[in-house]
Image 1 (cartoon, helix red, strand yellow):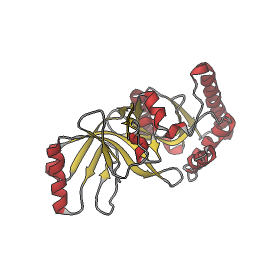
Image 2 (cartoon, helix red, strand yellow):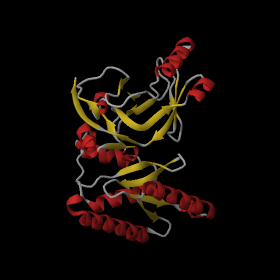
Image 3 (cartoon, helix red, strand yellow):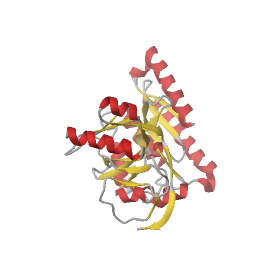
Image 4 (cartoon, helix red, strand yellow):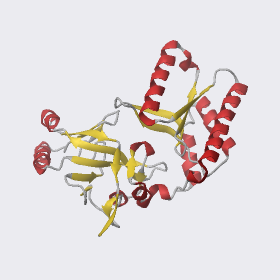
Amino acid sequence: MTKLEFILKQLAKTNKKNYENYVVTRIWHILDDLDIKFITQQYVTRDDGRYALTDMYFPQFHLHVEVDELHHENDVNIKSDKIREQDIIHSTGHEIHRVKVVNGIEEIHRQVQSIVEHIQALRLQMGEDFVPWDIEKEVSPQTYIDLGYIDLKDNVAFHRSFEACNCFGYNWRALMRGGAKHPIEEGVTIWFPKLYPNTEWDNSISSDGMIIREKHIDPVRAIEHINDHIDSGIHKRIVFARVKGPLGDIMYRFKGVFRLDIAKTREEGNLHWVKYSDVVKTYAPLGRN
């Protein structure tokens, strides 16, 4: 995927939101810097497990932009936005800048210019610590091996499942299974589920991303599957869900680290996985093939 393709897909997310589209595109075009990456509709996990989507996010600066339209101006939404903003700041430590679009185009331009100048100043302050956006490195396992971890907030996804496995000690060139045993950590599986009903499985993830339910559509096999997993003692999973990428291609997106809740599993009749971490440690290859 090229930078142009990525940028077009990000801007397309705002096409049906006129004010948001205007603000986002104006910020991007005034910045005019292909070393800077931005994401629209950025997923952010709050401390209570709920999630939020911010309108525009600059990951190199940990800076979010929110566009406040007229419906944000009533007392209820002002209070709700303030709580949401504080939740995001508390859970991430990121900056949030708001653009109010209710006072005319000149005021929108003034606010946008202020944000652009702030981002440019942050880049200068970072000096040699600023890492230019490299779209190829983003999907390279080596990037995350060097970093030492993968974090949910970074929206990490790989084109092929074996690339995700290679972040944890493998050195593979292919993988034809739906998962792999962690080569270093005991009792851990690297899992690549389809989190939607498909040919044999009825899997789902909760709206807050905290719970995954896994169930075989055949009742007999479903019970066998549950018993096998409880008896195995392998009750932790690093999850990379099979999703459509920005260009409609298949990718494997990091969803967090989950632990099997045995009591809930028995109660519900499906494997009940609960997220306990947004961050997972990575490892250099062990030379295995």
